[in-house]
Image (cartoon, rainbow, N blue to C red; front, side, top):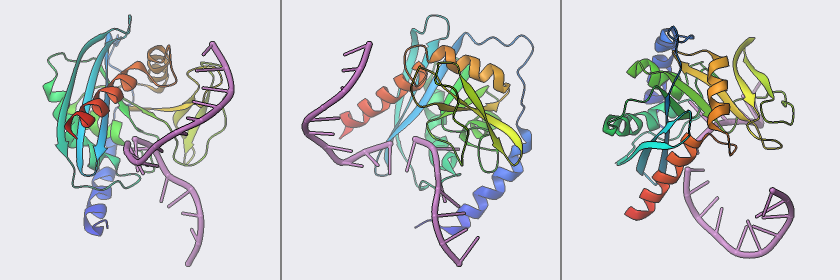
Length: 217
DNA sequence: GCGACAG
DNA sequence: ATCTTGTCGC
């Protein structure tokens, strides 16, 4: 049961905020650290995790987990309203200030071009990238090799890429969140996904939050 | 009107 | 996201 008024309100806010997204990086932007963000659920209880990784060596610099809860249901297109509060909470716990945040979901590749990654970026002023495991709508299959990609379009505009991060695996869907360009975002994701389909950042954050969640139960 | 729909 | 065994591949 999703309260219609909360949904309408959220959608209106997305339209109001989406023009604030900046689609290019600051001069000489070269991220040295990247933080992966993820949330694991047990009903309405949840654990959010952030894992900061050295982009060059892929070693973990710092990680934090935070327990919390949600009152907003999962609604496609309104993911941010469910996860953003806990994601921001765990980010506040970090002592390190990551150069870029890698979100588990879409940025511009969203029905209203304002997915979780954009929302987080605009609200915090951080550089953000969205990496999702599935796409809204359809896309053309990219080539079979690591690094191959195809554009993801929405209403005639390129909003993201289906990026093959390993030979023969399903592509991930990369889109910018805030303060970066799509090319740089894909370059970063490919670098972080040196060993697996998913970037090391998201993988480690994923492991951390579900491990912490089972520790509570 | 019907189906599709990040996690 | 989460519920879940065995199984294919490096």
